[in-house]
Length: 106
Image 1 (tube, rainbow, N blue to C red):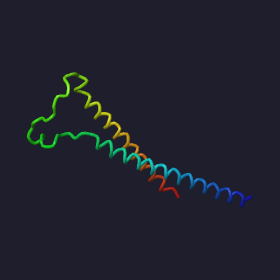
Image 2 (image 1 turned 90 degrees about the vertical axis):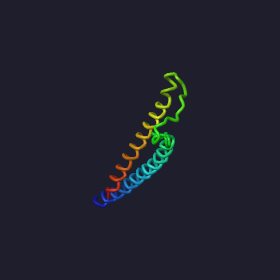
Image 3 (image 1 turned 135 degrees about the horizontal axis):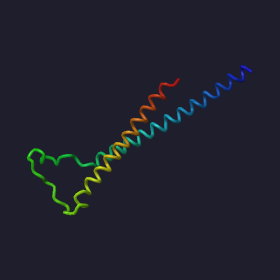
Image 4 (image 1 turned 180 degrees about the vertical axis):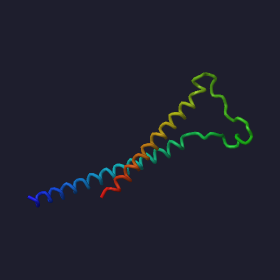
């Protein structure tokens, strides 16, 4: 009877180890995908200043349109890019914390 319990414990620990390994692998892949996504999204965002215009105080931006939609189209796009950046960085942070916790398992 004891021998059967030990065999069951060995088999169960092997499947748990395989499960943890699979979860780790999936989390590492998720972190890598989110990292590349963050890099692309950040590169698509425009900077806060336009080269030397911050020093001179001049504005080099041309008015694209005088309509409300034309004035706010850029800010909506920037807001969406910032939101996706925050989401992807949050996924990276949570995934890394879970990976660290899984690393502590025996």
